[in-house]
Structure formats: structure tokens, C-alpha cells
Image 1 (cartoon, rainbow, N blue to C red):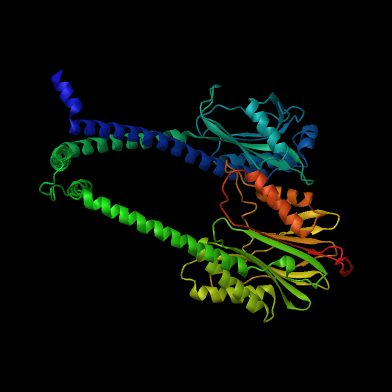
Image 2: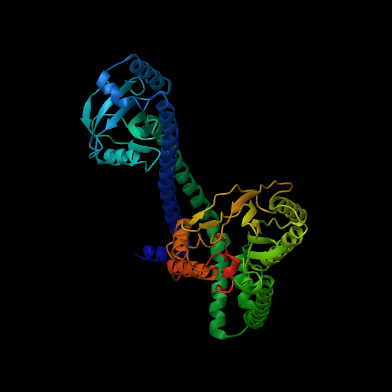
Length: 549
């Protein structure tokens, strides 16, 4: 009894028991993770390869003729297709390739069109179905996958039967749709492939993991037994005795010195020797840290003010221009953000518009933003298309971009008199365009590489035509990628819906409406990225007095 009490109070024994227990738990966890990872990776690989097999085999089947085969029987064309599928089945080394037409009233049964069998793959005993053979779906899972493919909810479906109860060997079945010339699903092609390779590879894999874990436990346990008392326990006991003495006598003794080669024990011993000094140093350090934080807060406030002043107030930027109405806003995620926008006249009839998102945040992102903004503004005023401007800016930034930062940019030049916009996109989100009477929609564009990523990149110009009453909405990814407390994204689709809810509003009201929609979706979740928007509406000159900015 005394022996067990002593063992329970022994630090070395308790540490040893804890370490061995943790190693056992670690080993079990490694085995479980290894098992799941192995099976998951194997399944993914099987599913991907089998899909490509099925997709290739489906090219031999004429989707327009499936129903006629049931009426005319085995014609020459039918036999030719069946021969190709049979050859495919043997060449691909799969058990079955079959084509079926599913009863779409309930997806609970089907009729066989083609059926090829290769029993040599895994010693199976399948009997080919004849043309017109009818049967029920194997189970509800198959029915659901039939429905998904016929309703075009997925490109392919996969069923894993690792423990079949009907006497078959474990296998994977991949189903792909067969479509006719009208792009209608007229049947399904299914490839069944055995998964015996998984079982053959899995056993030695798990045995290797188990053997390695137990060998590691044995080696570590032996090592602990040899060095624990000498290297750890005895120095800790000295530290403990000195701490007990100091608490009892409250007097300083001889320093413990270098009683161990481990920093943790050395630091503990030195902390006892210099406790009063350490406390004084701590208070002084805390005071210095507090002062530093206050200084950094003041600098961030100044930087935020500088950044805010560097962005134009578009609501009051063009008081004499009644051909358009424009508004923009930027809400940084931190004190200083990395997004920016701009709008300025190159000449009396050409308005340049910029929307950009820098890869970094804080003061580095703000500095990179301001440099990029200045380069774009200065180069645009020298003339040229947006693609030429972005090419110049990219090469300039790449020359000194040692911090490897980059920025996505959308640059467009509006010819105010005609509504014609020439734009170029450097890896930025596609804009949304409102056509009068048709609502907002995303305008898909060809993207170039981000600014600052690589020298001598080429960018492409493209055209957007705005008519009177049309609107252009620019934004950064902080809008569609805003997330709620469950990490669910706001998305482009929600943004377009919100835009169309305010499609008849002014640019200012549209931006405010999107901001309210995002805030309502996000809720109490913190903002993780800058949110910047710009909206412009092309108007009749006569509307200027009735629609003030």
C-alpha cells in the first residue's frame, strides 16, 4: 500500500504515466486519422478516375437513338455501339458498363439499353441484361442520384458500396448523363469498378502505422526512464526546496546557479534568485508597452486621416457636370485599409474611374495604395487606353516591389458624351451593369494578372456601352466575401439581388442599400476585409437640376 502511495506521489512516475498515456492516445489518433485520410484519398482518386472513364465511354452512345433502340431492337448501329462499350469495358478493366433509361415519374425503376460485363476483373458472376430488361432501382440512394442527373443538378454521381449485402464484391459505380442533340438527358451511362485495391493497400498501411507508433512509445519510454531523474526531477526538486525555504524564511540565499541545461528550469531558478528585480522590471516594461501602444494608436489615427483625405469626395467632386451622377464609399476593416477608388477627368469628355484592392492592410497597405493611385492618375492624364495605363503602372511597381505586395485594379474611361466605356481588368471583380428596364447583371470580363505580380504583363481593353438611365456598379471583394458568424459568405448573387431591389435609386442610395444589406447579413460578425463601392448613373443633361448629387 505504501509502495503505491509513493508511486502516486512520485513526480517521475506520474510524468512517465502521463507521457505514455498521451503517446497511446496520439497513436490511436494517428491510426484513426491515417485510416480516414487513406480511405478518403482513395475514394476521391477512384471517383475521379472512374468519372473520366464513364465520361469517355459516354461519347460512344448516341443520345438521340436510345428510345428508338427499344422499338427497333438490335440494329447494326446498336451492335456497333455495344461492341465499342464492350471493348471499353475490357480495356478499362472495369466490371460493368451499362446504359439505362430511368422512369422519371418516380426515379424508382429503369430499363436497360446497353449492358457489357467483364467478370474477369474480380471473379464476379454478373449476367448481362438484355435490351429492354426492366428492374427496380437498387435503393433510394440510386433513385436520388438518378433524379440529380436527369434534372442536371450535377455533372456526375458516384455510389460507393464497400460492404454490399447482395453477394457482390465491394465496388464503386459512377453515373454520367447521356444527352441528345437538344441537350436533354435521355439516359445514364454507369461504370462499375471493383475497389479490391483499397483493401489490399489498406492492411499493410495500417500495420505500418501501428508498428511505428508502438516502436516510438517504447523508445521514448526508455529514454524518459534514463534521463528523467538526472536531468529534470533533481533540478526541479532543488528549485522546489529553495522556493519553500524562501517562502518560509523570506531571506535571500546563495544563487541556485546553472542547475540544469534546460531553459525552463534555469529560468525558474533565476526567477527565484531575482524575484524583486524581475517585478520592478515587469512594471517598467508594462509602462513602456502602454506608452508604445498609445503612440501606435496615434500614428494609426493620423494614417487613417491621411488615407481618408487621399480619396476623393465624389458627391461634391463634379458640381457642374449634370450628365452623370456618381457616388463612392470605402469602409476599412482596420484603422487603415488597402482598398481605394478614384474618379477624375482626363479631359472635358473623358472620366477615368478606378476601383482597386491591395493585398495588404494597415499602414503598408495604405502606402502601397497611395503610390498605386498616384501612378494610375498621373499615367492616365498622359493619355492611352486603360490596358496601356495598367501595363505602365505594373512595370513601374514591379521595379521597387520588394515586399511582394500586389493590387487588383479595374480601370475604365467613360466618354461622357456617348456613354462608351473602355476598361481593363487586372485581376479584379467583374462590375455590375444596370440596363434601364432590365435590372443589374454582372458583366463578365477578361482578366489580366494583378498589378505588382510580374513584369511585362499584357492587359486587354474591352468596351461597355451605357445609355441614358444605365448604371455601373464597382466594388471590391470585401462586399461579396463578407461573412456572418457561421462563416457563410454574402456572395455575388445576394449582391445582385440587393442591387435590383434598389435599381431605381440614385448611386448614393444604391451604395447605402448594399451596405445595409451586407450589415444585415453579417450581423454581429466582425468585418474581416475592406468594403469599397462606386456607382455611376448616366443621365440626360436636363435631369441635372432634379437629381442633385
